[in-house]
Image (cartoon, rainbow, N blue to C red; front, top):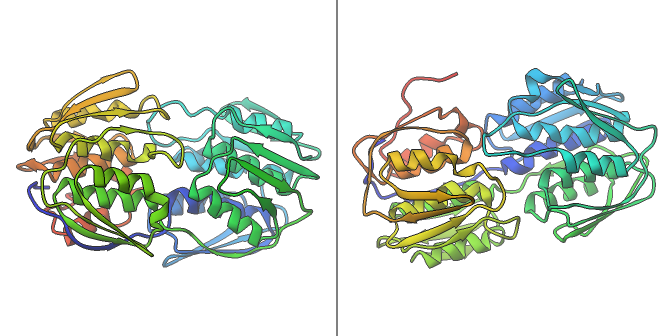
Length: 414
């Protein structure tokens, strides 16, 4: 890519990566065919389809729709080959324990952003009556019966909330999950589960209350828009001093992010289905601290550092969720960023223009952040290992090109 272009135009985001994969897993909870619409065209969707096929489901991907037909008795062993490729695959654990009373799920792979242990997932399942252990590289869980329980999470983990929630909907009695994650994607999952016949209250709050039911039915559900992709485009507009309308997302899900863009000097106008961002001058430095929702998303931290790298002034970025997410800062420094890290803090002094260089993406969001930085650099920048980006961003290169960016994909990568 060649830097220096102002990104201008209209872009529509698809369904949320952080929601659709969990919705697909939820289809395991009911015999029959569930349909999810507004699915994003990202690599992780067919990967999750492969995981579900390995569990005995029939999965059809057609346009932005996925149809999942779950048998009366799914398989309970999610094998290593499918699961190791991405982190979200672990979300089949809760549904399998609920439906089969047994689950063997290979420890998942995914982005290199730090330790993400499954302790809270296992603790929650144990409180519901399951036995759980790590054996031969797999999470193993068994239960003669699942019974409701009072569960308090040590941290509002999205993954643990989802797995415990999906196990609890078929448990006998009542379950409360305190200090539950509040992300819009959790609300989306709860909405689909209720459509399937689950009894859940408190979605979007810190306490979920679930009354178990004997069985669920298939449902048709539309996935919410991807707030992380939408925010990435908004930050791209600010970094390149652009003018962009972003559609397909609820702007209320991005209240703090949009406020940060205003702090950087952008004109931000929310719409019913998105927002409009205009940045005419060099952005101002803004401080960021990642926190669980409704805080600033950790998935946007690389883009925040990219913004800080070209801003006027000095920014402090604090990472409170994943300890290894600053790994990619070394690649930003290759691009001329004046940045240093100390523990979970990064101090970035903005420069007028970054300098082109070859860099390597270590995960989905780092890859996106490096591409946006490259669009603000002099000369030609190469970003390698861009297959990571394909896992979370549909048509990333094509959309940037349509918005005026000088960018192309060269060759192919495994």
